[in-house]
Length: 330
Image 1 (tube, rainbow, N blue to C red):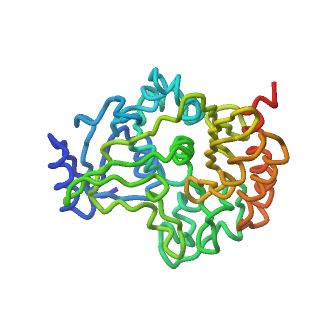
Image 2: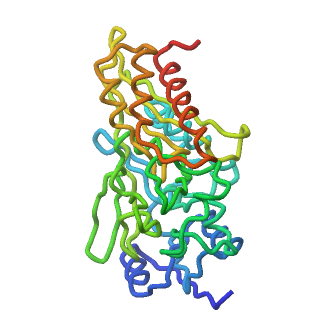
Image 3: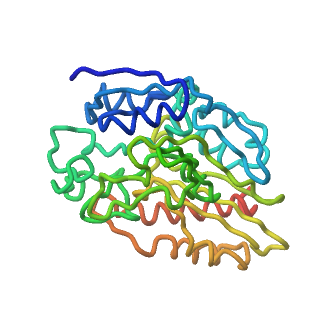
């Protein structure tokens, strides 16, 4: 390992200035992802760590009809928040489905948004073909073992799946990301924050180098909204999703008047299923509507032999969460 510098700035502006001025700088918060990428896998080699752990970016408050979450708030703190418990079951369930209790006590919300893929080929330096790590080198997963990989937003250039559970629920709710850069602050909708891999999978989000996530804004659903998060995985805990779905429904006399749906474990980014939402909205809360919505959500997939099973698995996951929320399953 090369020499590694360490700096602890006193405020956000100083942190942004330091990181922007150094092309090899990386932010350090909870460190749960950075430890893996730097010390275990050696996928990244920053020249300087900028420790933001003591910046005033922690806390949860209600601002109008949205929840304002500081970037340094931990996963455990957000899951335990009274408003999240009462108004945002899908967010709480997604948080508790991710990582382990020990990690949730340390991992930050901002860090969760920026966690890197768990693609085995990206994290193994012995694998030379990885467009996400080395642009233009190819994608070993397309012809290799790819059971944990993506089928939505994927292509021959990259099929690495986005790892976050939380981000799936945030995408469903139209959350937005507040960030600070040398040009000031900006707010980016979650659905615009992540970048489809295209032919440059190494670009994963819209943040400029040195730009720092400061908060996440989570809109609070209307009263009476039923929401939840369902994660299908190989074991009951501490495992990444094979398929997951975050959904929010507003139902009046058996008719769905509003619907939100996002998918995880199957997308190269947290996948908002807008075509499915259009079918659900205004339709009866029954299996016929649910099946039509699932077909729309999984209409345009890119599969390889190892991921083809995920099409049907994702459809069943969607139907299950919609049935649960509509009261069709006891």
